[in-house]
Image (cartoon, rainbow, N blue to C red):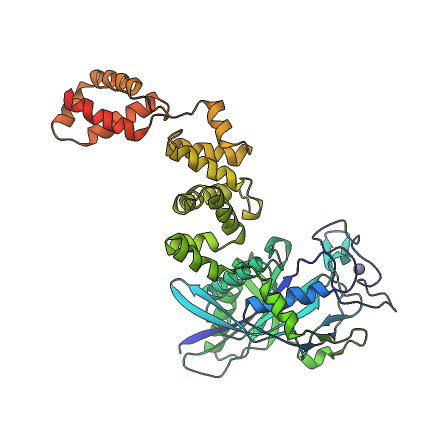
Length: 476
Ligand SMILES: [Zn+2]
């Protein structure tokens, strides 16, 4: 029997509002445990939650960026369950009337355009965190209680771990552009529950699914899907049956373990939160939210191709992360050479970020500094090779390119008289390569250019050197 894997995702994204969803506590990652808390977010009896308007705005903006329909009327519900990190013993979420319905994300799996449909997006509060400490037991940190979340639920449209990863990368990029979340997975700002089932190829009936919760890296999502799909296929092939359950995926071992039977909606005893009024959003408000969205990656990419004449490859790489796209646009605003700027970003900046483990958001180079480096090259003050080392110094020291060139004496040697003298001497000292050149070996030319660059510590103008070497070899 041939199997196919069917995957649906529930993506939890923490919203970057200044304060929490129902109180005025700081919404900030980290901090001393239990210092960003108040009676509301730790669920003391008798307190009253007040919905943060920014959460509604951010959720609606995320929905608009994903082509969802924004509900004019929605409400908050209580989802009852007990867990030590949830002091109220219920989570305020949205049940039957979520803020966003429908929508889709178009993404590329390799070269193929694919689409994932979105079922809904709802708003909810995050729970606290359990800190398991060896020897001393488990402690609870309530700082995360009441951090605003949106949960994006997809249709079961994905068919492989690779598709899931490609989709998540696109989703993350779009949400980052909207500015409603930083989507930092290492800080838990984007976490993913994965639903996996398998079925015979050609079947239209969904198999029994299992769920793996709280995966916080794309590689964990990828690994969980591959391992779980293989486990289910082996089970069915052996004549067994998949049990609907929640499983825990161990990223290091690459295996999942049964945790508990899957809950159904009725297990949670949802009911409308009597402390919170329903949410109404007018069409005018929705239009305002839509107008305030920035240019999104797909539109930006197309504009880079159409208006700046960049190849699709460049446009793709530059728009993948908003921080890089912003850096590129600020650089060309200072020095309008899109292709040269793009080349420098792709080959030098992205490499330096990667080698030094720096996130694009924390890029130490100012856009004007890249513009200045390119201008120094174009003005003939330094050559391209020196430009690359200067840029590396800018990255490491933060100094301006012109001061680096001056301090290190890297100014390009364009003086033909000075270079001619040097080249004549090198030719006189190397009769063998001269003979080779005259015998038709063009590689000998490279040898002489290399010798001049070495003698000038790489500072000679390579174009001028090339011309003089050719000229002098003819005369030799
Ligand atoms: Zn609070």
